[in-house]
Amino acid sequence: PRNVVVTGSGSGIGSALTVLLRARGDRVIGVDLRGGEVDADLSTPDGRAAAAAAASEAAGGVVDAVVTCAGTSVPGTAMVTVNYFGTTGFVTALRPALAAAPRPRAVVIGSISGTRPTDPDVVAACLADDEDKALAHAGRAVADGRARQLYPSSKAALAQWARRIAVAEGWADAGIPVNVVAPGIVLTPMSAGLFDDPEMKKVMDTAVPMPLNGYLQPEDVARAVLFLASDDNTHITGQVLYVDGGAETTLRGPED
Ligand code: NAI
Image (cartoon, rainbow, N blue to C red):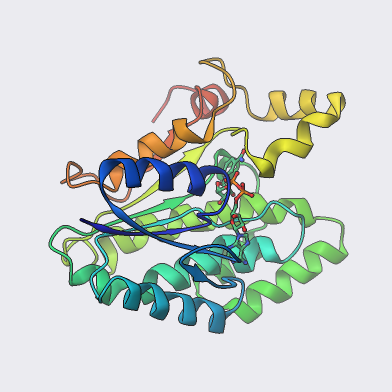
């Protein structure tokens, strides 16, 4: 069986994906704060390094695919340390184990929110791989009451990082496609609280209009990931696939 490492495997999209992968016959090595094959905190450099080492070891040094679903929407600096660095640091650390596989694949979960206005200082520091600087800017954003902007910033930076490494840092030459799946609103524990407040629901529906089939179930996202992480994906790399019921097209218009 293929060894697939899934972060955030204990809830929402990661949990749904784990079920589908196992049904397909893959071996899933789940990474989460608790309850996975590997328990780890991806918010710190040490946590990421330990998680990647343990996941790689559990896979016998050969990781056929990695999918990063771990993330947080709690306003604060963890949006940067988990959503961005918790993905980039972890995926980068797994590169040798991916390169050892015959047909490796990498998929990261972004977000439609990555198309929203972002904090340019945070995005730039993330893309420069300068975690201290990113945290300093993020801390200022929190202090200035702009904490909510850190979520779209983390996801915008993540999509740019994935597109960059896909071709410019040799991942394509190493035979490793790297893609982003960017969901609209998904009904998971992360989004559950949002809909308790009817005013908030109205704000969300305006910010993320989903004319095709409404809100997503986690499985709807997981099925798109399943393809990009499979052997069938031979040539798609550096792409952001919006799984969003038409939100991105509605918001940005049909050009490009
Ligand atoms: P969720 O909250 O159900 O699951 C997230 C998982 O990440 C949890 O199991 C949690 O324990 C894990 N996690 C959080 N911090 C961690 C850390 N420091 N170290 C290790 N694991 C950690 O969320 P959901 O909705 O399944 O989200 C999955 C991904 O999809 C996230 O990246 C999220 O930003 C993204 N997303 C979610 C959307 C939604 O509407 N639910 C919309 C667009 C993107």
